Length: 99
Figure (cartoon, rainbow, N blue to C red):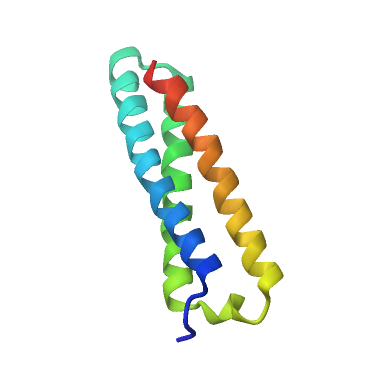
């Protein structure tokens, strides 16, 4: 297995943080769905579940197949940027959902 660079380590941290935020969002939206039974909250819950799985898969790739990104710092930077943008989007969504 290739050694993780600092860019991939940061991307892994963002994926972990995204998982935590998605668990928070999933619990809020799950509680809301049990109370209100609206299709919108069910859709939000499905959204959180799908992104949760996507971040778990990303983490497994980062740790088990890091060599996919090892040859290209541009690819590593792109992965980090996408994880960071997803994190920011989830932070905004979490703040709004918690109010």
